[in-house]
Image (tube, rainbow over all chains, first blue to last red; front, side, top):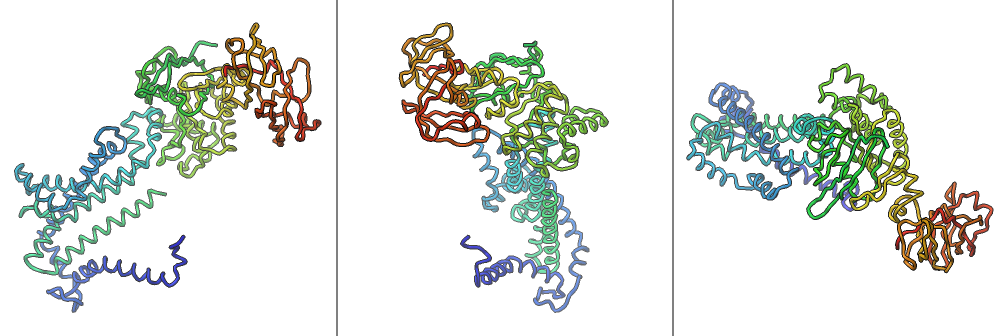
Length: 266
Length: 358
């Protein structure tokens, strides 16, 4: 091959350096936040004059932060369940269905991914205000489910496309009803896709801030909204601590996904 | 024929303007191994799928022991099926794959265990019970699929080109296994293939499909030795077709004139021909003789090429009318002959030649 890595010569070093630069560019802000959350400076000075855990103590001592984190987790979990359920049914329709407008439906379901979030946020805010769903958990979950659907549908539809329908037919000939065949054979066979869909839609809600700002009320705030709000009122390292925890959970979920994928694939 | 076990009545399947199966009628006795043979798109798989319940026929009926199957959904037909593609459940072990049809039937655990062991022994995969399908070769996967399809003692086993994804040597091995399993279980098998050799090896009877109709049905010998149409003659085995003019037919034996002017009588006629009608004479490559025998017809040819094929030789020869023909004498028969690029006569028994319309 023309661009064979082993034959690049001195370009190999240049390529490595460039890759390292890009990786650093992507990772440094996160690393800074984590370092600042352990820094003793009240004013987020860098490099930190000393190290401390007091911002984490402050964070855990403040019930409003805990409340926000629990709210986030609750909404993200419900969003994941709803998005996976709807997304799974939609995936069957998109992959197996033979109906007019299938491609239009696929486009429609994936729009939230390309639509500017703020446009969607304003639209759904106005709509939910009229329905009286603004500032409610249901409103939050419904809005986030719309945003999470593309992330649920893509891995599940891909998994379903890769699953030979003859296998389901074989289960039916063996005596399983069409529903039994799907539950006992098809779903376990595409479980990697379903699992990815659950994680991705959880994360789509967990770190979503724009729609959340419109949906939130003083009594119902998710973690990103709380971070955003605190950032505007007072700049405290507690925010860095909260952000670090947000990143930590996201990272943990990604690692779990990767490990499970590897386990399930063997 | 015994009382029909499975009966296909005027089965028709149309996809829009295209009719895939035209009023196929067929009776299959219990325990028979019947093969649907035919080129792709000939309707053989569609017929099988109608029996399995994956295709609703446009009209006609499928009866099992005089009861119509059409109103019974696929999963309640109690039919076994092995598919063309590998259809083992990827997340279940070999043993659990075979157990699956018994588990959905809620059979007691002891019976499931015993049956799985029996079935794995039948396909000789006892030592693979705990493996996942991905750890098996293609041939092993199809044997497990066979065990799974037979685990619930279905009255009929459908096989849709189950060996087409395997290489030739493996295919022959599993063909032998399928014959043995058919013998040991006595199950009625409907087998679909486009491979005429496979059909000849396996079947009690072959139904040769063409354009949605059964062109001819009979034993392999019937189809090979007594083809009723030139399509059958051309599809099963190798065949030479020589241009010939029909002169007269008396009592099923025709007299014809070949392109080089030679008259041949005593030919099997399929159908009726008018005097002077253009026809085609079919002769199998192995029906040609290199030595003169009584009552044999003679054809003078030029030898173009001789190749050694083990038990037979293959001779490519050209008739004086310029038509190339394929001759396959046994190697021993040829050893005594001098055939190197020469003009010489070859001979054939008119009783082994068949006349078809041009």
